[in-house]
Every structure is written in structure tokens, then in C-alpha cells.
Image (cartoon, rainbow, N blue to C red; front, top):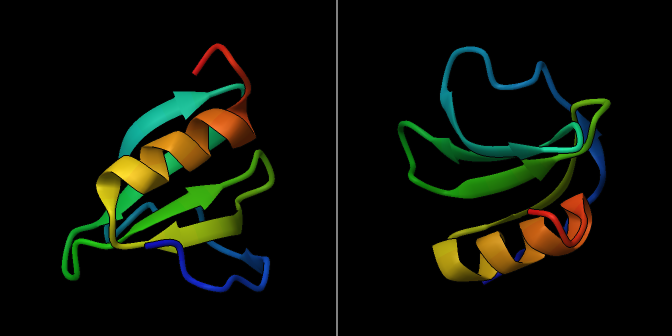
Length: 68
């Protein structure tokens, strides 16, 4: 499920986040503690987050472009 999002500046996920995919500057990440996912834009601003990996992967492809 994608959760409501307020675009929020992040530190880019250098500590608690694993980057699962990276395309065109966008990142799909999973939190090491909670297991939830987020999508960061090229400026490390969170554009989406949720707990369903399949849904987050589909959203990531839309954000990052058709090559993702």
C-alpha cells in the first residue's frame, strides 16, 4: 500500500536504508528496521512510501521512467 506523502527532504538513506534500485537519479529503498519502502527523487526528497514491495516497484518505474 502506498501511504499519503508529503515530499520530505532526506539524508539519502546512508544509515538505515538499503537501496534496491537506482535509475535516472531516483532511488527505491527499504528500511533495515521496519522493512517499509520509499522512493527518493534525484534531490533525495521522498516522493512516495509504503509497505507493499510490488506496488512500490511499480510506482518506482513510473517515477524513474520507462527504463526502470
